[in-house]
Image (cartoon, rainbow, N blue to C red; front, side, top):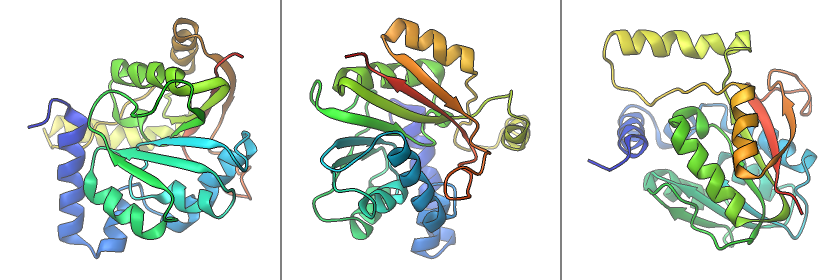
Length: 229
């Protein structure tokens, strides 16, 4: 057993998907499905929030390379993707440029140097962590960001009625003591409190159900945080 629930939960989840599905389908389902569609959407989210040629991006919880694949088609950047499941990263390597770096990292830290990244993204990561774990990752993100750098993160919130469709089956799984990855909700006022303590400026919240990215929706809500200059 790992020291962290999210490592064990996701290793078991991915193993089960690989047993029950062809590899490409398993790798898509492991990151929520709609692999090609969300590859384009997530890249667009980052570009609209300032990612451009020559920048350095750290992609936390990059999974099987869904966002990375789309990013590689939009901008030329220095890319580091981290995840806790090596089998996901092994697949990501096959669909992304050779210069993209992927690291299996199973600790509550970001394996990058101080002030080395222009942007950190975390799509569908904090949705599977305890609040204190998310806070620590954001603390680490603040450390690795350059002054003026941004965090683009997705999250689930009860204030968005569309997200109840995730909470309801999670509740039933808990009632039945079924093992599955954690689904965690974070309200906007919590993120604002975290920003105050971490030294981030919260730039914006975005309702991810809006069809604003090439006519498509992210599904989860988004927060953009900036490290002051």
